[in-house]
Image 1 (cartoon, one colour):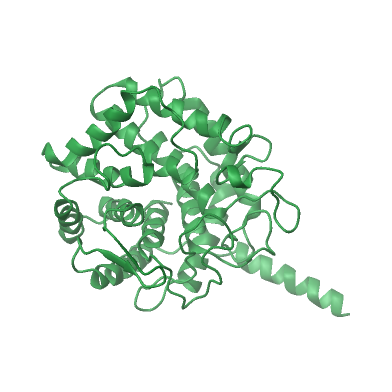
Image 2 (spheres, rainbow, N blue to C red):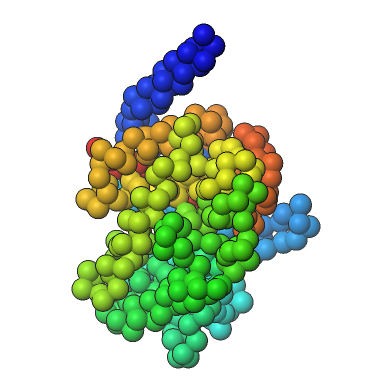
Length: 376
């Protein structure tokens, strides 16, 4: 009798989840504004250094974590043209002199991530100082034959879209050629035979996690946010890269294959675990990976690439899970995994826990919302 009751309960729960509806555009925008207002109120000075008590260290505020926030802010601005958003982004970039952490000689993708927003702001107001340093940094990389810089998959999101944007602006396919060389090195050569598993269509975060490394349940270790970074990178590249590019179809196929692999890994509550193949290894909902997958799925539907009937229910569940279980009344976001590179980092997560950096979680959430807003 208990077994019958339990199965009936599971069926009812599944029916309720599948029957969820997408909130109205007004509701989606309202929660995005709320979360963003919380952050802007916490950081009225866009140029203020970031001190992290748990690490007893200070960072300049144009590091990758803050740069990802501004990616999200610009996505919000694209659907909600409020001058305060634009001014806040310009203020941030201006206070850093439109520069890169460690200067133009840096080859570190994390340091180049801020260039995505610098370039977006340049396209709004074409002042040369806005794009000068990020272009100089990428051009210095292209002056060499070195292509192995992206040895961790987060780097693909931080820098691949920068190359794409520069290639489009300057109508120079050399940027496209070099970014593919670097992408291909990460995909096929880093680690043992590349960081991408062509059988499971997911990425190992870096060489430390390729087999024989396994999760406690014996599965491969695929970190949720790491794979989310790649999904986001592919979205932000495909939306700009000319379809005539010789590698466009490979990026597109990788994106579609990843989405196919990620769909069945979604939790019943709508979120994803930090460890995609092992729900027992620090299992539980996590906002950043969930946001990035939601962003990727929604963009695919909005651009006629992914099947709406197949992916929209997953998007609805994911968005509703994040809004219901992660967003506080004041806009603070819970269940954000702190910085790191594997499931155990930043644990345990909770509704009230403040991560070491709050910014990139919001950036990912705003990216997701910007595409959910466009869904019909």
